[in-house]
Image (cartoon, rainbow, N blue to C red; front, side, top):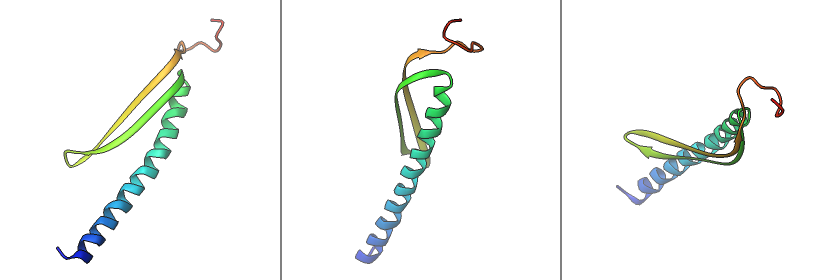
Length: 76
């Protein structure tokens, strides 16, 4: 592969990774909003890596409390 071809391939790969990172930032925001409906999230980590011809998305959340389903206040 020529130097030019290698550089073009690397640019395309980097652009693809950039798109994935932007997508994951949006997904992390949506995941945080969803989990916050059910728990007091204190830490959320979302990562993605290439795996077996696709991607592995890893989500890890730490919560200080999980809310009771069906209760509308902390008093219940």
